[in-house]
Amino acid sequence: MTDEDPPGDDATPADETDPVTADDGLERTVDEVLEPAMTDAPLAAIVEKQRAETAIESLRAEGVYDDSRRVREARGRRDAEPADDATRVNGVALPVTEPPTETAVLEVVKQLEPEPRRTDLEDLLADRGWSGAALESVPGSWAVIGSVILVTVPEGCPDEAELGAALLELHGEADSVLADEGIANDGAAGTYREPRTRLIAGDEDTETIHTEHGTRYGLDPATVMFSPGNQAERARMGEVGSADERVFDMFAGIGYFTLPMARAGARVTATEINPTAFRYLLENAVLNDVADRVDAYMTDCRDLADELEADRVVMGYYGSADGAAEGGEGTAHGTRTDEAHDFLDDALAALSPGGVVHYHEATPEARLWERPLERLDAAADAADRTLEILEKRRVKSHSAGVAHVVVDARFE
Image (cartoon, rainbow, N blue to C red):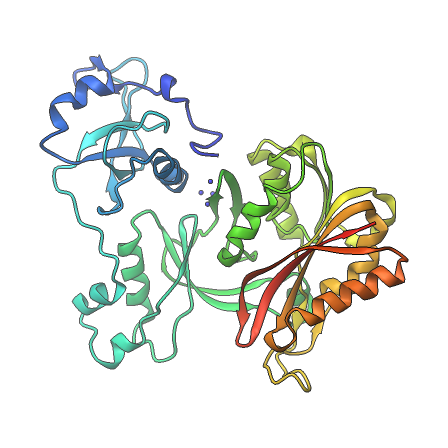
């Protein structure tokens, strides 16, 4: 597997980084190797391909990553003992402005034939012969999840395989491109929020590790949902609360919110009914070294609510839609089932007095913020508790005329 504890839990501290080793087996420090090279060639840091994204995040945090050049394939080398028993690794060359001091790398080298980063997908496809109407079908955005690119293929795309190949050229650290066809809504797949995807380029194995703000998410974007648009909210969940706070994550998935909160010191009870997502949740707790602070259950969250006393409840789920228009609201939002508001009474059963609920909803713009606040008010009345609204936030656009929002609410 490959989105962010710079330099990563598996990284070596800078002062323990393996020295660069010359072909004759003599060990020299990075400074000794690079001192004469600093003025006549740009530099690149060699890392294992599976660590590319984590390393890029760490290099950016150091301020030494060079966005003007492309990531290149490289046959990095780490020498074993003895020196003549060298082994090759599948590596990539990450462009840097100077040798990193905090990010563990295999070696730092001069990049003799650097390639400028081409950020324009249209240019790449034009080089492949696309013109006119074909170029008008080029997508304007896509997501990179670990080593996997997720793209919505526009109608009229003349050759999705070429589109995929161009995206791989644009993102040298990526291995696969998946066409994003949305989230399933029907039956068990809808309940499990399974993504609908197709491989259009690259490796068939799309399991990866995505790193964000130091949190690493192991997943397969072809089998479990991951929304890049929720990145800021995932990061925020790592900043709210205090150490040893008791958290109930009612719809944990692979650990979207559980992991950053546990990494910040919270003790999280996490429930998830999708068996694939639950497996990744368990693995990711270990991957992020927080297994001792995460109690995970593959069960309906309502089965545990009465047994808990939580300081904070996360309700990061807004149900599934049938795709039909909602009566009277003028949107294609559809009739939704099993929305978070259907679980509010259970959330309050688990919430200690004075605790906070993070309530998510897909709300038609015409009823923003009226509908989520009405639902929270109704839940407070039903539980005979007082309500204080702490914060209202837009997470992202959900669909045409519909916003994904979150409301932070304190219940006494």
